Length: 601
Image 1 (tube, rainbow, N blue to C red):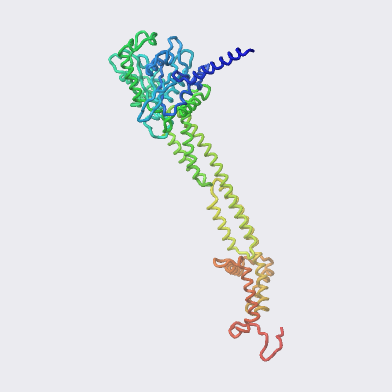
Image 2 (cartoon, one colour):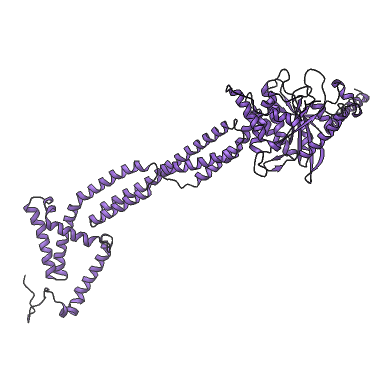
């Protein structure tokens, strides 16, 4: 391959790249931003057109023209932009529609709105009711234009038809819910609706009178539901009030197919005058696009458009309601967060009825917030149901968490009480009073602290365990006490006889020992002793000494025993000689008078 051939190839490539760069870099032309798929069922973004918007750093506003196909929307936009048909949006004279999807004029108009430099884009939309399209597709184009625009021009030839009233149902949804909410954290502000009727004569009526007449109730003496629905739309449109404006525009020329070749001097002077008034009207009512309380620049607007389009394409055949639902989704999440916040403050576990009451109150607040914030009376039903389902799911998890925490708490209390009962079974000094005190304390702590759904189950277990522990303690109590008293009497005999040599103590100990032993021998069993009044007196005395509010002898038995042993040792060695003259009770003497002989037993 020779050098000249390579030069030719490189030149062709450079020309191709240069032409491509020029087409992308030149924004003084229309670009598609949203295009239909081949089946005209869904919409998709066109990146070439979005580049024209995303490059804008200032706040932006959009003027969209909607209406039936072949109604002159593209020509109207060119007139508003002061462009010819050959410079601006393509104008079709054939039967099929020229504009597919939504197009934008690449160079925005720069306006000073309330002291803020604002870039205004003009949008051309595909016409309604053209051949080969579904009503759902028209709805999506209408919905997208409604949400994107700051001013929505509804271009109507000659008059307002019933189909035009019905088609505005989605705009009504937006207007009803967002009109008058300026300054609040709402999804977006509704577009300003401009009724534009292109007609040369109005039969003695102003265009506003024509619109008002079209919005009056349709007589419905037969109770037709469809007519009722249409009348509801009329009522809603009437509520829009200042958010809608009516304007009439006469025909520019009788020869409509040659409009693109005519200059202003060739057009109807009345049309030219009204066209300039229309430009001034649009400029006076347009405002920057506000979403969630802030104006959008180009990149933010593109991101906003992507979210809207994703919502519209949701499902196989999405409708205008899909857009309502995507914005209501944010409201649902906010209300669900409100419910979670209220329920998150609860301290689990808690009684089931209290939890149910808290759920009812929190749900009521969430639903009330949804009623105040959502938009779309007809399309909000599924969002309401979704919020209710989400709340039920969260509540189900909270109920499970309450059950878990209740089971853990009650199990811990049950285990603690079981351990306490086991400890009371092996008291060193058996005491019915101490057992009863521990029994009541355990039962009281369980009653006060075990709460929640597991309470009933653990109450049954507690009753069985506590009853079993009481029966076992009572069964062993008398026998252990009898053994203790026998042992105690023998010990006191030894103490009174050999340690402190106190005869009264020895005698009392012998009496106790003889009573315990002879009674059981006489009546063949120790159980019969437990019904004797003397035994009851002994038990009462024992209980008073062993356990009382002042002293728990079972806990202090060892320290007290050591102290008593030390005292007796001291008394044995030193106390008797030092305090003998003061002792008034009879004691054993080691010596008789005048004799050193030990005492004979």
